[in-house]
Structure formats: structure tokens, C-alpha cells
Image (cartoon, rainbow, N blue to C red; front, side, top):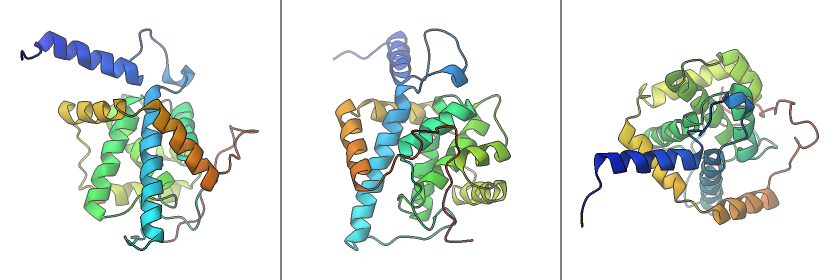
Length: 225
């Protein structure tokens, strides 16, 4: 079987990125865009992981590691709602959400922390903010991201430092790793997204933004200080 030429590989990669919404056929600011496909896929993956981990915790098959990212209770918004809010108000590039997923994987591997509804939102706002700082040419400061994420600036500063030390300040992502994560996301079926979203909402999530989506969500106080 023949191998793909360099031009073919580049073309396939461009098609993949376009399919995920990482690139647009036309120009335009991220602030004025509808949520790209990659947001739903990242949300689906994380919600599935949260659901799996919480089932394992309930059956005592794994033990939770309490960190500064843990809240006293789960925020009243789904992971997808939270991610879409960050995208809407931060104007960061869609690629940041893939990079943030890579950062989250590195954090989990280094700390043995299990992603749950108590820590997912704080880990998300921190990892996405770091991704924007590393990937984008322009980005908002910590105070702005804290307001978008529903926590104080002081707490986000603390979370940022904890995250950075936990991953040994490893923020560089090479092209091969980025493309591999994009391929894995692209394999997720749309039916999985719908099924997981319905399951999570039926078990736990209450949609409190529907009447006033511009109001910032408020994360519950953290357990560890």
C-alpha cells in the first residue's frame, strides 16, 4: 500500500482542522462566531470522563484526591455550557480548547487527580486561560478570565500557579501531539455527544443560564485553600 505524499497529508490535516472548526473558510473574529464543532467534542469527552469517574468513586473503586481545584459542590452549569461561555467572552482561538485538553491530560497524569463535577470547571478555566496565553497573540488578563469563570482573581492566580507547577511548566505542544488529539476528537460520533449530554443533565445538571446567559456562573467555594 502506498504512503500519502506530503501534499496529501497537509490537505488531510487542513480538512480535519476545518471540520473541527479550528479554521474558517472566511475571516472573522472568534468573538462573533458560533461555537465550533470542537467545543461540543471536547465537552462530550470531558463529561463522559466525569461520569465514569464519579461512578467509580461511588463504588469505591478509586479514591478522590482533594486539591485547590475542588469545590464544595458542583456548579449549576454543564461542562458544555461553561466551555461555550468561555469561548464567547474570551474570544480565544478554537485551538486553545484542544491545547487545554492536552494540558488537562498532563495534569491528571502528574497528580493522579480524577476529573469530577467538583473540579472540572476550575481546571477548565485555568487550562483554557493558559492555552490562550501560550497559543494566541492577544488574550485577556487573569481578572477578566476570573469574571468569566465565576471565581475571584486571587483564586484564579492561585489555581494558575498550582497548575503550572503540577505540569512542570510544560506548556509546549508539538504539531504531532496536537494533530493526534484532533484526530481522536474527530472520531467522536455526534450521537455520543447527544447521549452523554442528555445523561448528564438527567442525573445532575440544572440549566440556570437559559433566561440570562450573560450572568457569570458562580463556582462554589473551594474545599482546599
